[in-house]
Length: 229
Image (cartoon, rainbow, N blue to C red; front, side, top):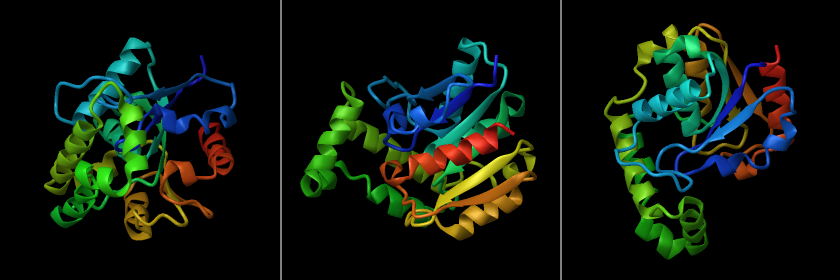
């Protein structure tokens, strides 16, 4: 069997974020888009964390009898993919991230988590609140935001990838960044790409941070080139 490709979504997202991308990925091999626990209607009894999400992906690989897979991770999904590559290097062949934030300090975590106030979103962006409610039903979308905010604050206190972890990730990794991404900096992306033994940096022209504002034809072209080598 060809090496499967696993798609990992972003914070407060779901596997549905990849609906527009999947038709462009070809049919040469299996492609799986996962919902992290507590997302997309799935249940979760424990707090969100990178280690728990990584363990969830590992359990999926074991259930599907997948010895090793390729990973595309959007935003938070890219962080989870690299966390898995750090903890379980034999299970990861290649990783391509897009729009993944790596610069987590108490200050950046406070700023990012403040954007996840369910009350403010419901008041100021009701259409987005309705979309989140539909995306995560029957789970409570407000609980998804609360747990995500807690996880971001944990990242800010060092409960994520330590700086020395990147040097231990030996598989080929492309750190992708949308040219117009206003949430992730070029500096942090370049720093991680440089710290990875087989890392590279890829800028996607005219793409913004939201997955819905990424050129999926361009992205699929880059993914196919990277993973089929």
